[in-house]
Image (tube, rainbow, N blue to C red; front, top):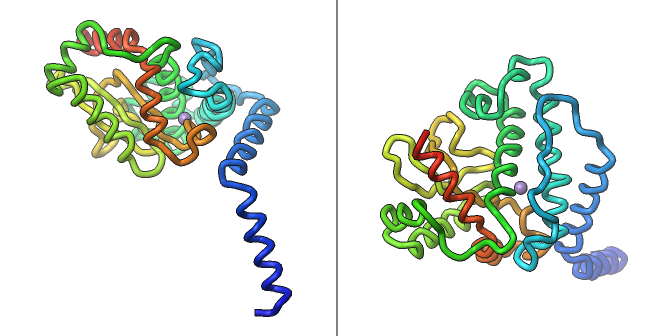
Length: 249
Ligand code: MN
């Protein structure tokens, strides 16, 4: 190696070590947020729901900056791209529920963005300030019945969330046929309401976003730390209502 190249390579190594992946990721997320703020939502039938609490309401478990970027950049992006994908097509007249239930007939852009919109709208609801603790109501009884205990359930859910390779979601669902609770996971923005081949279908009661954008700013690549924090913000009262609704329908 020429001395000049050696010096250049050494310098790059030093700079690379100084600018950590976490710093680069933070800069990337900040840029996403600036761009999202500067870009108007594409016209169409779908709108971005407000967060049901302040960005900092889930602190110290989920940090305000992550919530802000997650909602205002990522979720907004899914809604905007979904609008762009349905406009001028028959899907323009369909509800989000109808789109999910006919996903095997929809193009990739609708699959990713309808999923992204539904999943995030659900995710904001299923967390709450002063959440966590133990489940309540009929859901508590059913968890004990179908998993043996709350601890066994949380262990299985944690395993599904940490074991999902790459980006995706972990779910607690009500199986439509048996009425039983089940733990499952999906890749990307798929969810158990979609009629896709191989999908473990059911009605979501709890869901956890395990995309890196959901935890990287605070936890870097340590997904298990984020999953642990999730248990402190679960909105069990909302999950219980969803369970009751699922059993009725
Ligand atoms: Mn997300």
